[in-house]
Amino acid sequence: MEPIIEKIPHDPINSFVIAGIPYGPTEPFWHLHPEYEIVYIKNGTAEQRIGSHFSHYNSGTLLMIGPNIPHSVIGNHNHRNNYAVVIQMSRTFLEKKLSAFNEMLFVSDLLERSKQGILFGEKLKKRISNEIENLPKINRYKRLISLIDIIGKMAASKDYTLLNSNAIHANEHSNSYYRIGIINKFVAENYHRSIQLSEIAGKAGLTETSFSRFFKKVTGKTFIKFLNEYRVHKACALLTNKNYNIADVMYKTGFSEASHFTRVFKKHAHETPRSYRNKIFEVQEYR
Image (cartoon, rainbow, N blue to C red; front, side, top):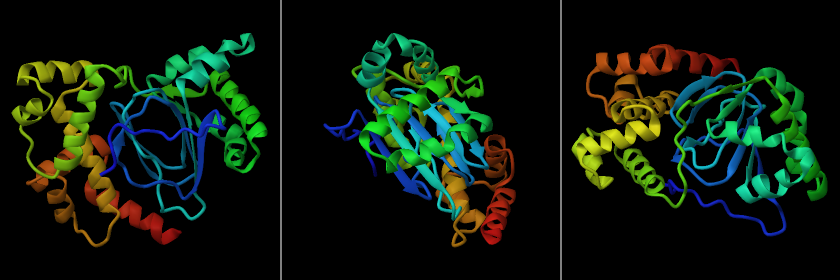
């Protein structure tokens, strides 16, 4: 199990960390880190989960995620022509160094919006996609100049959607930050079985009432809703595996009744498990 509070290894000779990945990552572990992050998926279909937001994309995605917002790794292996670029930038780089230039003061609004998670539209994605894809391939000097240009275009663009009115983020030195890590790690390891409110509250060092109040304040939703979203997210990944039938997926993700599983899955994925699986297999066959 990967750590929930992810430590990004910083390169002493570079101002930011960048990775270009054929196909894109697939393990949807739930994690957070104090760095700003830009995620670009060229194409393909998968789920994206950022803070309290959960949705699907069908033709790739372009996101900017602010510091300490829990999110799952986004990507897939189902599209042969897919490519992912992930850029992780420290607060010092963006908030103090880049924003120190008068010409870049307009970027501060982008940084503030990123604390809710930003999904950029197809128009901007197409406009800057080649520039982003090329970033890992060019030298350090050109990479920095190109990244500044990309950030500037993101800041100036009106082609975006904010994903969370109540994004889950907290100062990394606060109790909330560590409680979020404890809660998400426990859910990641135990979602396949029944989880009582008293049990998860105890793990967080709170009474049931205090836990419910804390969780709703931080995430904007109840723990049950969060848990169901997580289980559906896992079910989506398992449904792409032909070795598991739908009943297997149901039990492996903590559901015990078919009607309840179908109802919860449809509520969060906007279609039934069978419909979701059929669509995935049709896409795989087509490719």
